[in-house]
Length: 142
Image (cartoon, rainbow, N blue to C red; front, top):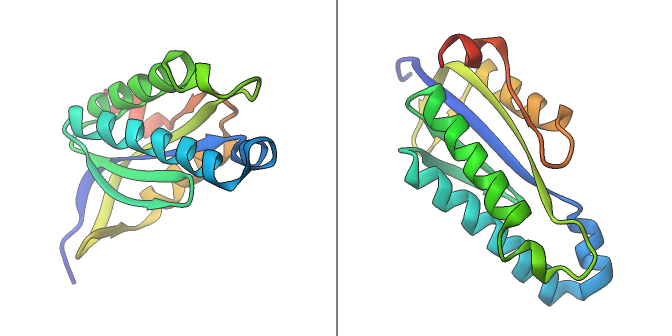
């Protein structure tokens, strides 16, 4: 088994994607979600992060520092809520919610596992549209 590694974990999830599919249909909604995922991936890479995986309309990334993760989260939020994507959704509020945690993970090939991952995911489910929710471990490591 691989050795534990300490990283920041970020999950970012498109809020309201069901409304996009209802209003615009599969093709346009899929295109919009894909554009959001691309923004999230790009922000991850620009802040020294690694995209671990995408799951539907969500991205999971790791970062070497808490600062890198939160800077990426901020960039994602601004790009999606104020960027060109927001103006292309004709009345459907386009937003993401982000959750982060910092701590040990167990790397396994192209994935990471552990309680830090689960906590970051729970933070995402606690966030509302356009929010970034984090833990005290993240704050302590800023």
